[in-house]
Image (cartoon, rainbow, N blue to C red; front, side, top):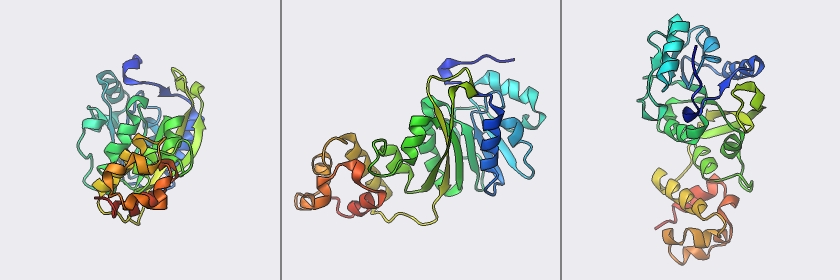
Length: 250
């Protein structure tokens, strides 16, 4: 058997109805290469490895779980990457889908790591703490729209699929969870540079209670700061608004 490690944020999915909904969402898009993040005890894995025609790999940090999975599933003898997801190299040479019940303590870092491979990852299906899932999918003007939303949405369309209650896990987390699906956009956001966009978004939301004029004044000439858009707070700006402003930065 295995033990549950709080230090690794382990909450293992046990609800077969939820598992089947996640698998069904995955099957809606073509997938030849699949990476599962944090397979844990294999609740999703047992279904994923049986999907016909898929090259499957899983990344798992916990050595005990790696041993457990390799003993339980013969197909995983050479299919597990025993590392932290944040430290792995790109797992496939060709495009691949990412799926997983992401460890909540590093879930946002996982998304930013995937952005490094965004041109190779057309679809992501992830379980997150509900608050994080909502932030990723949030629209401008929402109270939860922020850095995560504005940095992920230039590259992916994000759909909040469904809630997952605490009792669907062992042990039950103290929060509600949510599953989201991210699909790679075909059109690129028109920005001065990716770096300029990231600097602008992070600076703007770092002081989100202030107007843009006060939050990002170090990035623009005084004359530019007189434009009406700088009367707004960061949460009111769309990703297109931020993108347009990059061309006016110093």
